[in-house]
Image 1 (cartoon, protein in one colour):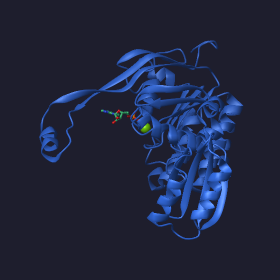
Image 2 (cartoon, protein in one colour; image 1 turned 135 degrees about the vertical axis):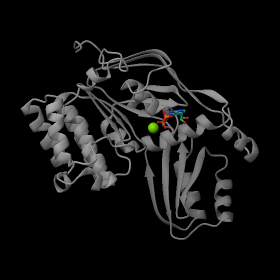
Image 3 (cartoon, rainbow, N blue to C red; image 1 turned 180 degrees about the vertical axis):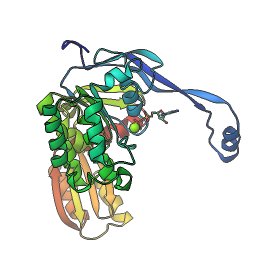
Image 4 (tube, rainbow, N blue to C red; image 1 turned 135 degrees about the horizontal axis):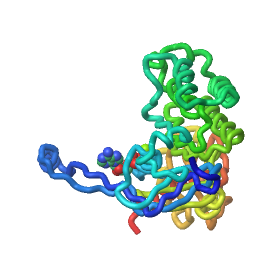
Length: 342
Ligand SMILES: Nc1ncnc2c1ncn2[C@@H]1O[C@H](COP(=O)(O)OP(=O)(O)O)[C@@H](O)[C@H]1O
Ligand SMILES: [Mg+2]
């Protein structure tokens, strides 16, 4: 299909505008809008340019509605862009979707694609024939998936009888069975429990190690990204906010440290207020995860000993831990500041 010099993905000034029914807030205006045929244009992705080389692992992140799925759909040929240029493995995806499929794996975690009425084992056999997967490749990818993702228990059960998580695992296995050059995974770990998520990450890492698979991954679980992706593309309302290494991102946006405080007893509003007033002049943010769990994010300039002393003075502390900046924390703060008025 494409020479080795062709990048995995090339996007230039890519844009996607949806036409949708006009929305109004308020009950009566909302109701009127519901019955009207008025429509408006909405730019879901704007002026997106980036290039991904073969073998890279890229985490595509951004809040709900940032345009991640729209981007993945354009890259895989499901959607036609409204503007700009796009190539996946050297071909225009929406023009040559079928040809591309030979070298591409796609997973939409929200909507597993694997055949409904037959067991996964049968689907895997069909895929082997459809994609003309060589025996040695199939032996590796099949065994790797069955073992790593622990499919043996339900591989002979019709997919429609499986849980969403089991279906997801079969779907992921199916999408990578032909060892595609590039894999697009849109929230592949959604609804999976912690241990299974770990298995999914390991499977991706192993496939990449063995076949040099290019990976584009979107997820809400940033641990997926920390484990599998070296590069980040961060989208904010359809625009590219950051493109670079994960490490570079952490260095650039990490501000300081986070204090995790578990309380022995719930703090009332007055106590919380007193603590926050005490530290009002320090560069800290308070987040109450639960009434028993407080997160204090300290900027570089904040004095950790002072913050800790204040917390101990005001609250009945059961446990306390200091964390370096985790990708999770950085991204949460970034979204918050992106939303705050300038
Ligand atoms: N088919 C569609 N028609 C109209 N608007 C859409 C359609 N699909 C997505 N959108 C809108 O485009 C924006 C981006 O959506 P999406 O790409 O699904 O974001 P993400 O995957 O980052 O959550 C959202 O505001 C969403 O409501
Ligand atoms: Mg999405």
